[in-house]
Image (cartoon, rainbow, N blue to C red):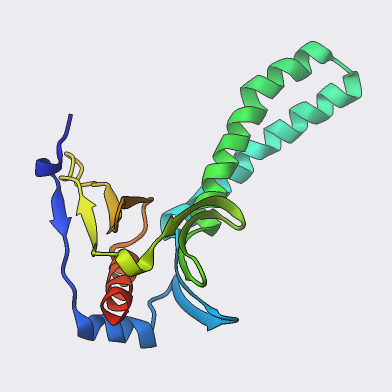
Length: 187
């Protein structure tokens, strides 16, 4: 079991870099203003997620074939077995791939400030009292034997809000942290 002492806390604010990100966001990030609200967002799309599409296509073709066979022959046992063996894992994999392709983290500044993590309109909202935000930082676990690590973004206010980071690039994560810190110091 890992404790917080084993993790690396990344907490640097660079005003010049933040201003650069605001005027020219990196690919896969955005700052949208309008209709009384501002959105700061990061997409989960990476090159690795695009490589999952051919695999998904290869997986779905047999599922469609099995379902078609069950419909033609009206074989309930075959359709029940194929449902559990092929369709449910395919749906789970499809959800993961769609999340990797179209998922996003958005911090929306309107009457209520909140963090949205999800896919299109489906996801979680965590409300923030922006006036009482004290700190924004990332905690990165120590790398495993393959050099991979996990990251979480923390927004400290009266309560600490945790945002898990699902495989976004370091540039996108740095954009999110720098721009949020800029907004925090600007308030």
